[in-house]
Length: 280
Image (spheres, rainbow, N blue to C red):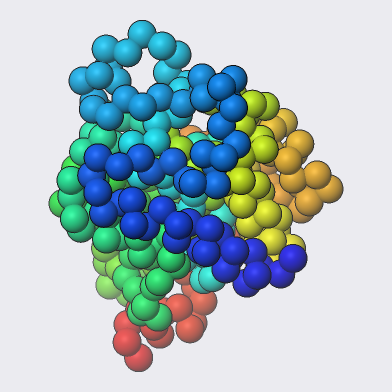
């Protein structure tokens, strides 16, 4: 399956939950996944709708929450050169309030539809330093991983007598980066992948990552190596497995196995990317 075909299938698939997202109290469990929910599988999901009830819930934190907007992927997948793949988004108390922030939900729908402008400054929304993202999104987590890298790039540009700009560099990283989660739904801890592997949403993620690998992208598996190898089959041989997601925090001069740093540096040094960013 070609990358464009796989991406369009994902966009079409996730467009089915767009109407429900307009209602803050509606379930955001994908309708195709609902059809697969046997009584046994339902035990892996929680209908907890508020942060208070989540914190008071005595059930396993590995349960998936379908009241929080799912995140199957982030960033501009057509443009990104580096794809970080993980298991699923981590739940926090603030995640339950995201549906009440119109700007957050607008960015979420734009990402699901891969509806980006050519000169989009921050297509990887978790690195977009808006007030909404800092309050509700994943900015704090993702920025913490890349802060040293961005500082290294700024320092390198200063040595070349260029005027370093932190926000400009962060924007260029956002253009180079994307992420895909195997399971799109949030949970407080790692969910049961064996039980969830046949969900249509999970299969969409698997096919998308396979297509990205075949398209020659740098696919970095950050967590659950054994599980990703199992679902990717032979394709996993062309992915890069890093020890822990914390290695993303290393700067461009640090020992990161060099794969991530080199790939990001290549993207940042792309002349066409610089021309787009500077409007020249």
